Image (cartoon, rainbow, N blue to C red):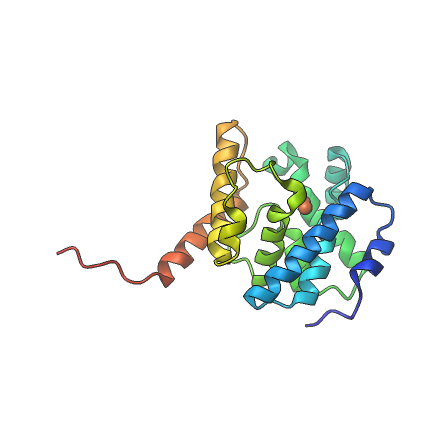
Length: 204
Ligand SMILES: [Fe+2]
Ligand SMILES: [Fe+2]
């Protein structure tokens, strides 16, 4: 499925109600997602559009996200109830589909899962996920992850794995809940890596 030739500028106009600083981040993620898509064989146009749209619900306050998720019959588990910010991807994907019915299923998934990742992430999901974490506006935000951009230049899966493991440790160190989708994404990528690694040398 392909997306129509809508431009990021047109999308920015369609979401003119969003805060300017958020739109700056969405534009930057859009650009990075396009670059990663070109590097790793995803559709750069869809990556740019999904990269822009990934955070349309990011500015909503926690209670509003909970209310919107319930109105949309999106699942709200105890982890989301504890950290409603986790709902901005799922809620955002529904808002985007309502406003832009041409959005492809792959784009909607990339928006939906950009915070936690998930088991079996598709290529477009990976590209948007990583572009969001690499956005220069977030520099210094992810202390201890300074090597992420360098890894992202040559290995998409290893970069995502690196981030997911950093995130899990970061949450554990602070006594915070870890979303099961994040652990699923990490376990899945690890198994994928092992499956594609050369066989270990025979120890006998
Ligand atoms: Fe986000
Ligand atoms: Fe973001």
